[in-house]
Length: 191
Image 1 (cartoon, helix red, strand yellow):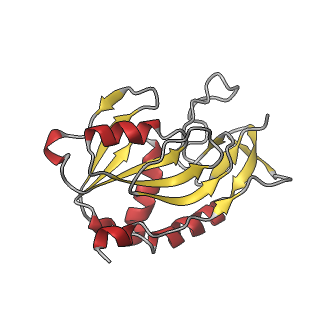
Image 2 (cartoon, rainbow, N blue to C red):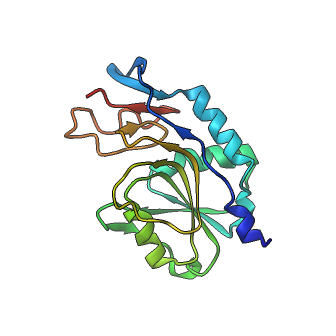
Image 3 (spheres, rainbow, N blue to C red):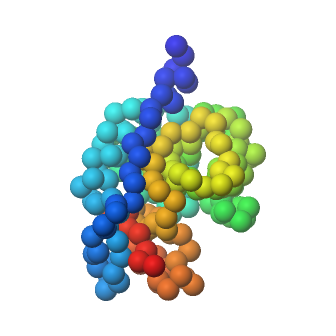
């Protein structure tokens, strides 16, 4: 079996939203505990055993969301290779595109969450050789775009989540933007 095929043989664990979630407080705001910091750390450590960051020519980190996950994996693997930032948004807005001179390389694109799949599809349009490494994939999203060459550390229920670098446009949802971005785990909004 070729190296490329070995990269993508991993079945991520599914973490269902708990029936009776614990309520915690972050920056004075009450939220549901979804995946605790210890649990998330264990999931990422296990996932790190299934991937070698040196198999990619360049790592790309999409927006701020992918940074937590990518940096955690880089530390676990003592990765010293190169990485760049790109910024593709879910509304097909591209702020920082994949640089032209690397589009044909083996790119490992890190993102926090795979929900609709629109953002990685836009990156694939620009850089078709890209492989994707997502911290989480939401299950149960109607019309979710299938992304080839993708890896996921954990799968979760289709609920609002934040933390671990994630920012799901909380302004307008009754929560301040970025309030849980640095929280090292996943929390869910209290409805």
